[in-house]
Length: 230
Image (cartoon, rainbow, N blue to C red):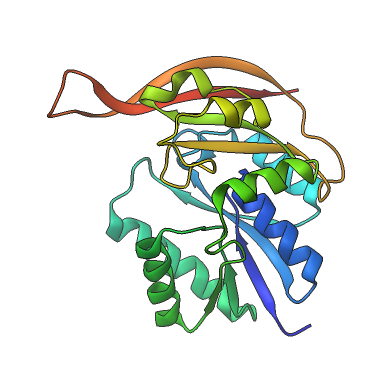
């Protein structure tokens, strides 16, 4: 198979469903799952999930894991230099495609396409322009299980919940059902493409302040629930 690809893996539901489609279609060979990891805390960038769980997740998927270690909150120059370096290495190994789980953020898609055009790699977006609610309902119907590990400050009550129909019913109307606008992030721990479930227990709920809002006294940040490997 000549269509050798790297899959940009967050560990969450959108990545999982996109990978599900790719594996089912059997048109591309996945060389590895690529994940950016916070080097200071050994956690998946933004999602805050422990590296140990990421490793177990990749093992259950039976796909090699490729980590890009980044400092906490890197500037754009640092981020792009790291990505260019590592994808240059991957391209030398014969990889021609980079796959993402993005759904409808046009600016982000264009940015990814431009960056990979520079290094001569193609991009794929298996979920692109699909309806968010349809996607998450399909995800649930397929038998996948995912837990919310990170939420916007005002969505604290949803942090640590497993996504099911009840979860969707309770979401505020201005929140995308897939959290595509950054409202929340998830960790998938079971489903059809996994060889075995990922086991963990629920740890501490913490708030990470990112900035002070100029319009109110409220902090701007995210709630994180710690998942502790068993």
